Length: 371
Picture (tube, rainbow, N blue to C red):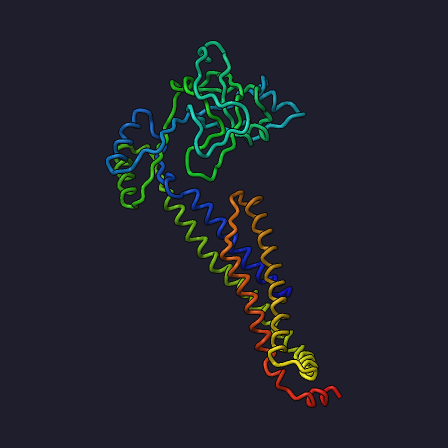
């Protein structure tokens, strides 16, 4: 039972982990998701790049402006003051260069978890008056790295000009989805005049069309970079497929080892089963009854081993999905039922095969051996 259960646990847990990783890739680059990214597009080049994409039949799924900012102060304290204060700590979030955008809506990879999202700023010019602009921040970097909550102020350096902001909402961001995701999102009406670049997202179901668009864009706009994410996703899928083959072979080896151990245990206990068979036969049990008793015994052995291995595999795969891969857990009931049935059937088959011929032994032979 231990050997069979361990083998079942290994092969099922590894299969579930593989399915979980493949499901994440499927969600990340699934139907309708962008797989072609054009970035570092200057404002004067946006229309030209869009025309090239449309001429090849590719849709423009997103056009996101990106402005580069640095954090100048947190809750009224400058970064230098925070750095010199021994009671506080600075993190990468204090020192990094932020790539922010401005828009009036949330995307499908963002979920509002606190506050109210402001998509349009209608107040006085914040660069002249020092008015605070409401911004939306990603929850993790706000609470864990910057230690800020709703209503706290942040001051950013926009090309040498300070811009005061106030945290008006917090978002959860699904970073695994392909798209433009940001730690900080500004409302429209603030950063339109700041130096910026654009990122264009599209989707191509044809490698030929994607390559043609990239050639034309690079030829006309050498500074624009293109990434075909479908190649990256296909590489991951191929890699996982190769790893799955090796992993399944190793897990199958564990199952075979367990079956050999089971066969050895049956052979060792063959004489004891011969005694039981003779006793049952002497008491009037038919061959069918003896076989039924053995079948039930091996059935329970296989069921317990398979059920234990599958339950442990479910727990291990869920833990890996939740704590390590941080993705959706895939159960795959069909594969679990198949594993349960195969392990149980093999246990019964090997047990009955090694117990063949026991009922046909004469009782006198068994008694003479005992003497």
